[in-house]
Length: 232
Image (cartoon, rainbow, N blue to C red; front, side, top):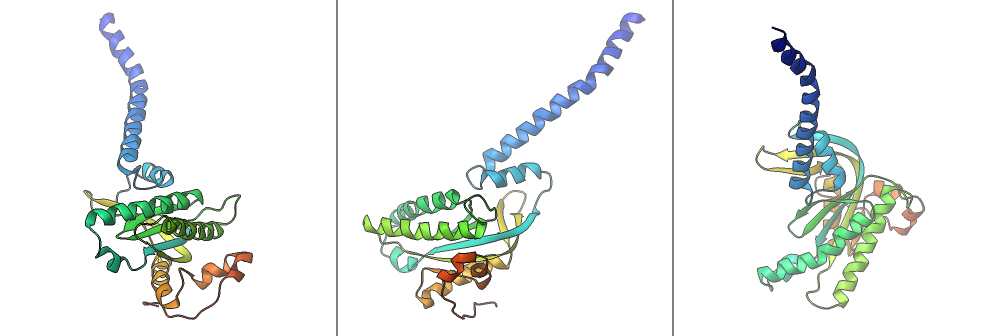
C-alpha cells in the first residue's frame, strides 16, 4: 500500500507549484499576443493598458485630461484629383513620417489616421513642460517640417492643425472580430472643428480658448478670435 500512497502525496504537493508556472506562461503569451496585434497601431503605453485590461473586452478603459491635436491636409481633394492612387499614398506617407516622429518626440501618441488626417493626443507632462506646451511644440515643429518638405519639391502638401484640451476617455470600440483603440470627448470634436475653422480664418494653427489659457507665457502668442464651431 505504501508505494501507491507516495506518488499521490507527491503529486498533491507538487500540483500547486505546477499551476503557477502555467499561469505565468499563459499571461506571457497573452502579453506577446497583444503586442503582436497592437504594437504598430498604438503606442507602447496603450499596449500596456491593453495588456493590463485584456479581459475587460470592449468599452472605456481610462479617463484623463488631455490635449488633442487634429491635423488635416489642406486642399487634399483638389490635389488628389490630379494624382494617381499610388502617388497619393506615397505623398501621404512622405508627409506622415515626420508628423508621427515629431508627435512621439514631444511625448504624444498618434491615435488614428483618418483619410488624409491625423488625430494625436498629449496627456503627460515632463521635464520639457506641461503636456499642453509639448502639444504646441509638436504642432509648430510639424508645420516647420512640412515647410521643409515643400522646399524639397514634389507635390505641395500643406496642413492645418486644430488643438483643444479637455477630459477624454480611452476606449476599445468595435466588435470581437474588429477593434480599434481611440478616445472620445468634446475636446476631440473641438480640435477637428478648429482645424476646419482654420481655412476661413486663414491660419494653419487654431486652438481653443481653454487650450490657450493653459499655456502660461505661451498664451500671449495667440490672437483671440470669436467663432462658432459647428455643434457648439
